[in-house]
Length: 261
Image 1: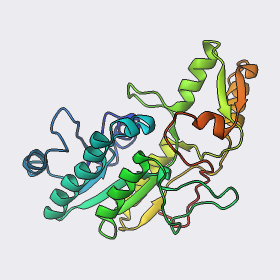
Image 2: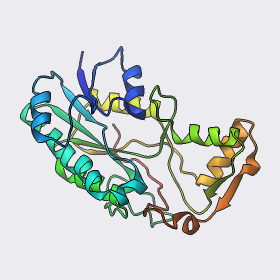
Image 3: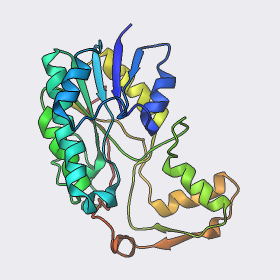
Image 4: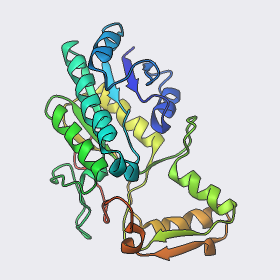
């Protein structure tokens, strides 16, 4: 059975993968309480004692707005942490899968989807640090870009869909963008795609994303309808209005895949 070490194993995706893969792979969950990925020596000392075939790097600083306020920490985790892990995994001559994001794109192209061939041009610090992480592993590891993961997970953190449902159940008004696109992706599909990649590993770039892109506003209406909640609580707002005092982020994040896993 293939042994898969997973950083960020207690996060939204990692916790669910541990469930999904329990009969397929030997999952070795790694958590930041065990070692600090920013500490080069700690990473080397810890991973030298762990036996694995593939390292799945999910751990990251993902707070998009927070990254603008704490650039140093975001850089240390997303760039220096990635470098420390990757260098040690390479020394062990094992495979590495780096999880990245659609935020590496600027999202300025309304009618043109972003593919694996599209040139990244991140706008915000979060996207910039994730792209720097991509550069570290490029050509030597698999890079998998995700977009708005959602679905059931035993993690403490809820996915954005569940947070929307929770707000609507609490009768809170939600202001959601009309002139923007996101590409929601089921976590279970991410699990299936990553499992195929582990079985058929290639050090390429992959977009592992949902089939459809949708505006946040239309998504909010759909969630309200599907869950028999008050759709009048979903209020329209423009991307420009939403973006005030927030970190820069892609407006038209229509992501598609050309490279099949």
